[in-house]
Image 1 (cartoon, rainbow, N blue to C red):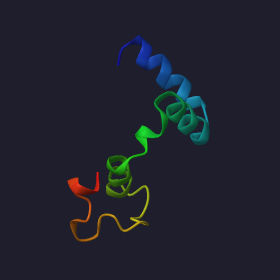
Image 2 (cartoon, rainbow, N blue to C red):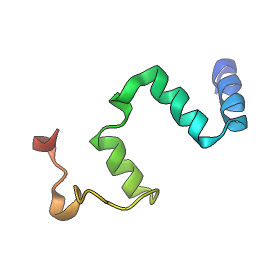
Image 3 (cartoon, rainbow, N blue to C red):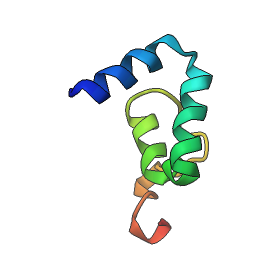
Length: 64
């Protein structure tokens, strides 16, 4: 990481999870909260497929 990334990372680590989420979505908007990120959250075990988007390969390009 470069100096800017290290500085940002250090400050994010001192914030609560909710503050980090708000900071990221305040900057990027809700475009971060898309189906790709949903799939990542499910794949990494952060959440279950509550919307059942990933059943039987339901997550495909026509859903985008």
